[in-house]
Length: 158
Image 1 (cartoon, rainbow, N blue to C red):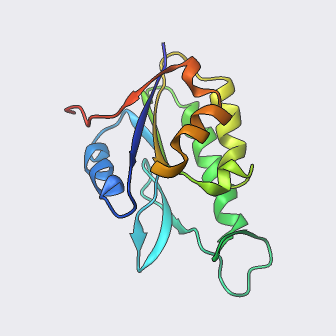
Image 2 (cartoon, rainbow, N blue to C red):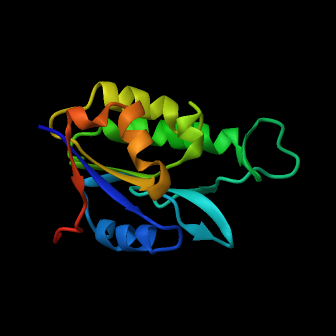
């Protein structure tokens, strides 16, 4: 049966860095990491290492706004596609979503892919979700994740 593992903690507490090291060299892991590249938060496809900046360029028309941040619709469409495609690949035992934040609680961001994945979670697929500490309970409630086995992720050995 599928399980959901949570990584939560304060901003800048090395969640993505530790997760990146855990994913390195593994062939059974896919999904998205959110590293900072050239001082910009990005999505990085774990399997291909391809990355795109989350923040919109100044001339982008299709954007998502949350607080003082303006995010690229194009990047989020790509990220949603990566999650959905990866969740269906044979051999993937771990799907990483780094991270679920305020956009998703508003039904934006990665929400389209998350709703599909959470409603049809294959029994062989374990999810690793990075969730902001302040909204963790809200995410668990809104997506009804407690119906799965939810526990903290402890970076098991490869």
